[in-house]
Length: 197
Image (cartoon, rainbow, N blue to C red; front, side, top):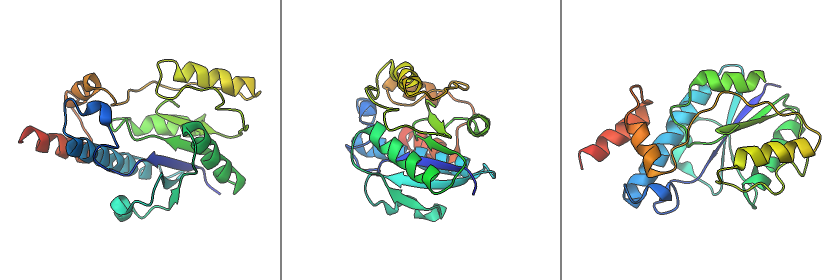
């Protein structure tokens, strides 16, 4: 079996995604931008020929069916429980490695994904797991990476940190994204449409 890149995505429901951007965008625009991020991230992941790609969502979501990748529902619980469950399932079916990839970094270079497969926190790769590897990790906090490293090491697992990248969560991140010289196509189109409103 090949490694798998598991893309974690929320359904693009206005008022439910990218809510910290709503001071700068409407709820509908934030949902459209999220959908563009998912499309660009799926396209980038599909460029990695050495791995399979799956899409894991919290609810059934037909929005990205055109990408022809297996879709699975995430289990209930916090992000740590959902990531652990997806990693457990992938490694349990015999995959040599599983990578959990979020959708908040549409400009993430494909080379960073390849680096993960060769060795997140735009993503999290694992060869081995432990039920307590995400215990006590505060999600969406300034110290999430450090606390994840501590929790994983406390389970006796090794940790390697790869090249850093940025998420688009806050209005300042959106401004940074808008200045990027080489945006992925869906994100670029979405931002151009916002500029004409």
